[in-house]
Image (cartoon, rainbow, N blue to C red; front, side, top):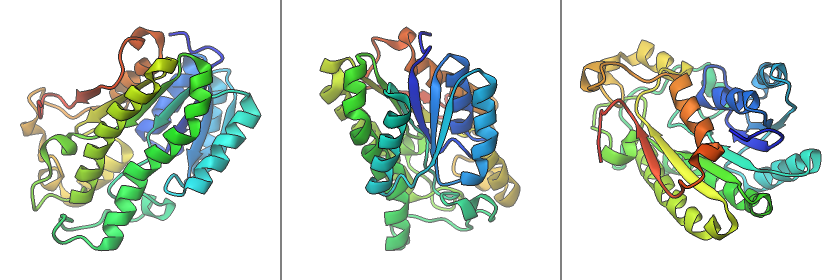
Length: 273
C-alpha cells in the first residue's frame, strides 16, 4: 500500500470502538506513523499502544477540531515531531457524543430537526462535523502539497443523501446538513489540490456498529434509530467498524491513486443516490 514511513493525522481516533481508532491502527499496520488528534485524552494510552505494537511511532495531541487555533497548534506539533505530513483522515464528528463527557452520558432523546433545534445545537454540530474538517484540511494543505502524493479522507453519512425522518433519534437535521457540506468540501478541495498530487475523497457510511451506535441502539432501540431497523438494509445487516476503516485506509494508499473528489457510499444498499 506504500504507506511505509508516511505520517498520518487521524482526528477523533482515541475513542474506543470507533472508526477513527481502527483507521489509526490500520494505517500503522501499513507502515505509517500516526498523530492522534482528539479531545478524549483518556483514550490516548490505548491507541498509542496499538500503533506502537505495529512498530510505528505515535503522537497524541489533545485537539478541539472546532477551534482553528487548536488545529493549527496540533498540525505544527505533528510537523515538528515528524518532519512531514502525508495523510489526513477527518474522523472526528457526530450528532451526539462530541465531547469527552458525552462518551459516558446516555444519548440525547427526541428528534432534533432543523425546525426545532437550538442555535447552540446548530453551531456545535456544524462546528465539529463541517468546520473541523475545513480547519484541518486547510492547516495540512501546505504539507500535503510538499508530499506529492498526499491524501485526505473525509466522513459524510447516508443521512446526507436522504435526510432524517422526524421521529428518528440519535442523529439530527444539522448533522445531515453538515455531512452534505462535507461532500461539497471534498469535491472543492480535490479541485484545488489536484495539481499538487493531493487526493481528497469521502466515505458516507450507513449504520456502523461502533461503540457509539451500540449505545444508541441499547437506549432507543434499533427501530427508532436514525436509519431504522436492519430490515431496511438490503444486505441484511449493519456495517462493522473494520469494514469502514479498511475502506478508508485503502483510500490513503497507492491503489486509489487515480481516485479523487468522490464520495463512496458504504451502507449495504440502504440508499443509492
